[in-house]
Length: 381
Image 1 (tube, helix red, strand yellow):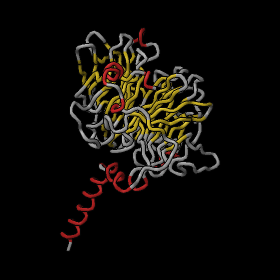
Image 2 (cartoon, rainbow, N blue to C red):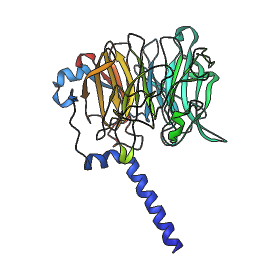
Image 3 (cartoon, rainbow, N blue to C red):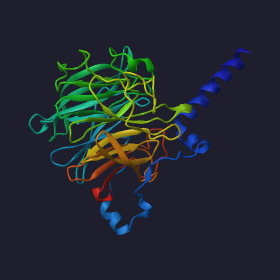
Image 4 (tube, helix red, strand yellow):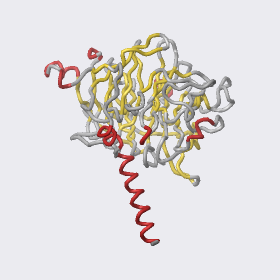
């Protein structure tokens, strides 16, 4: 009887893991897309081949789960691969530098990447990564002096550590704001109550000085800038200096309710108490969300002028919307399923948008050449 019970237990766990990693396919089988104001936008199949060749190009292939893109002043691309490599892409060469201490497990690994606002003078490069300590999985942000000539990371300095980590919900985006501060997204590390605890670093957007010290005007006398987040994945500022963020909603049977939020210092964004259009005193509802029967699983976020762009992993699309005051309108879907899972959108120095796929992360269908970086002309939009 005991052997039968153990066999049944492992069978249930196995079925659960298969369902978790293939939920997007299961969902598409059982649910029809919701009716919404979503506008179907650009598709490669609808483009003239000659103009397509000029306006869309694949500039890199065979990457290993690219997570972030940054541009050096020279125009070279730096890319983090979640498995632990910092890749530099030049016109005709590719160089990889391993980052020490990276633990690539589940949704964790080498993730966020940012250059210091004064990079041209100090060559400071920042990385967000998952590592393993005596306490288990944790996340941290490190600063390096990047030697471009040797493609080498020197003078490692820990900016912040002991951010709770887990197999899921590790956050990972880092970016410098117009105030010169470093902003960091962290997931709830699979423990929902972390998000409402302002003494925890999990389920938050954090804010620090460039050297890791604490800004004097943070609301809670710690690194927490905003809280009540499940797994924020994108950060961008508009031309008014306002911070916007994308966030993953629930997975599994309660899928949907992915969010785009307008972030205010010290504000509570409700997870796990509210979602979608629900309200609660002292909590902020999203500006837009995906609803209960659709999912974006949003990744990076970029703002160009009054246009906001974000990418979808499960949504397998690039989304664009217009910023009108504190609202978003004309949400439009581009390249639906053309490239599979999309994790990165980044505005290049040349005015083009750069997208990166994430089909090798264990949750997508791997296409020839994956993972890729795709360069898209702004004339599409």
